[in-house]
Image 1 (cartoon, one colour):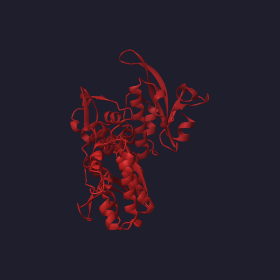
Image 2: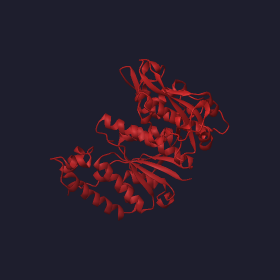
Image 3: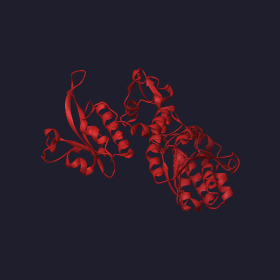
Image 4: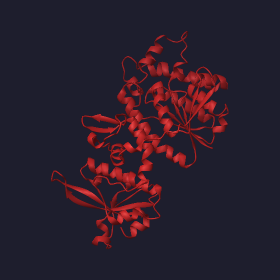
Length: 399
């Protein structure tokens, strides 16, 4: 079976190449000082602008030359990341020519250079590999680290289902990387990976940890509220609306909450099962009887229901944030007005009805109508009345 291999990347491949006898004693100090700095920050620094050209570039050149002129044993000793990958393929990288690899790197100069060295080396061996870097991701402070983990979780949620659908085995290679990142990646892997691999320190012995049979207690999950908190617009929910939800799943500020990293991880792993059940009701959205009947049609499968609820959650979150403004709906959904004056259900003309798409191939769509109401403060706002849901032609012929 083909594999998707996700590897965490540290910077030891660079720092281990420092020769204490030949190199300046300040190199380690300077690299430690700038470990969480971007290239731009280093180049704009009056005290450390030399780090890239005088330290990192020479080290990179040495490492690349050494990798290209060493045997497998020496290469595995040089790089924790490569040690894990060589171990995964029993030291025969040709076994991985049908696999896909991603390196998770920090958004720092040292992290990027190290990841690029590993990427270039593996590409030269016929491995298909890319680098993913969450914006601003570093271990410099809690905010940078937490935001990076949030983006990593979103990326994993986007990419892994596609590979699982194509029947890939998901492998997390956690031999390299910073300990803090490894800790989070290990927990993430327990939810998403088929196996997690490590190497005994100081050896080449591979340890494979199979995915644990983790079962999430969904009884405490409120699907509408969790979907809104997980939406791109990051809606806050009053804590009083989340009874019995463990605090570890929430980030609470005053009397409002959003999802913590663990909350997002938990939600991502249970939302599919919750989204394929009964039709959920979201704020600013009204389900007309025709829409409810469509949801129960025989041609509507789990995939359709899941995609529908994802779209409804995003639209509801957007309308909550922007007081019913449908112009702010994510362009990905291609929300727009029909054309033409054909008579439709409810006495409406076609050009009085809107619609949006649920998937990339535009095969399924939803029709809806904007209606103006007054909110609790007696201010005008819009709600969306959902009319029909189904295949393109089914909805298009009678929206």
